[in-house]
Image 1 (cartoon, rainbow, N blue to C red):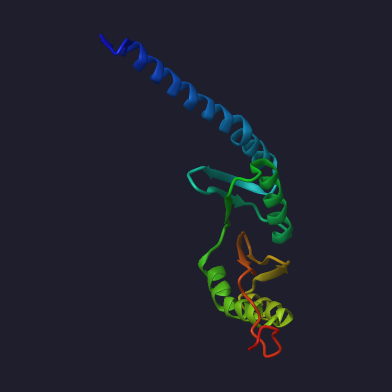
Image 2: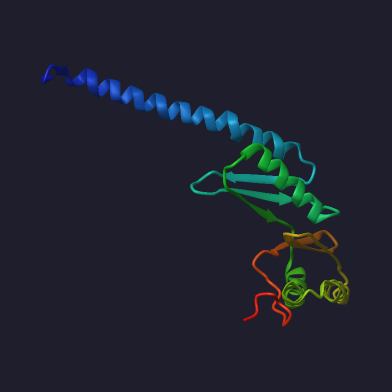
Length: 182
């Protein structure tokens, strides 16, 4: 069968083979440029209990179950930096898992008011004291770390631990001496 001098079966076969070649090349590129390096990175990290990678569009989601760690802020920054090295400009999101129970969730629930107040007002010492006291009232231990991008809350009691990361960005201080007053 021909159409204007072209053999239709050959054209269709060529198109299908070309498409399969492109899909295969994309799969190989993803597999060896970020899937395999991500697997190696996360398997080799002592703080990672397990992980799951969802490379759906538009954002790659990396779900990481952490073991009990000493410094959540440092652990998170190291993971984030390592992921940036592997993924480059690809957009990704880290979702942390922990070993929480209802008692730790209660501690965090009552503490989050002080945390968000500190983000708005800048009273970080008061926030840290409040969170620690709230945890101590339940017989737990809380540690709060902060850097320019996030507040890291870590609450532990027995074999259970809760990790929360609250972004600082977007929480601007609203004071009377703000330079943008009208």
